[in-house]
Length: 114
Length: 113
Image 1 (cartoon, each protein chain N blue to C red):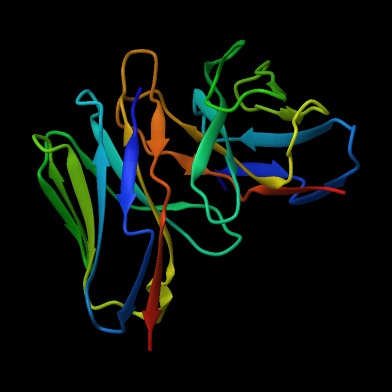
Image 2 (cartoon, chains in turn cyan, blue):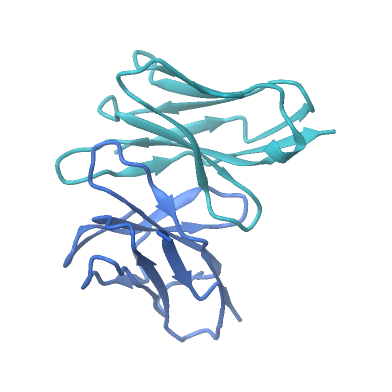
């Protein structure tokens, strides 16, 4: 089955710096890669996603890149702010006619220091 | 207001008791999922259902049971057979599109005393 690894497990950056979180997946059939942000005690919320036919996607300060050959994808946050502090999860999903099966990485705790 | 509603938000249970967590969605989603989250850990899949009256075990189904009698509802029962049930439980749903977004409920925090 699919296995998703995520690094680093914790990341501290100064406000205004960039943050990069990397994930690798094992199943080459996975075709959808979302990133979720989870604040303490809250539900995970989708912040950006990418489909397997796209190499890069950007939304304001957040971008995701996908390398299908190497089976890895990364989250890039620029100009970090204290409110970016949270746990970030990557996931890989393999959709078929029956539905989707999401496999999550273990998460990265990002701390943005003022 | 469309979304996923989980209840209760907090639940305390004595050892040996079964407890049922509710999950209701009005997004008209076919697929529903239950995940368990332990402190500092990722999301582990307990059960999922892609269609009414059908569900599949996830990676950690032992000690849990589910039903899917209605499209809107996917309750999770934590049985006394679950050895370490204290955790944060998240319900989620999505369409059956190949790349549909997964929406989460607010979560239910279960503590076994």
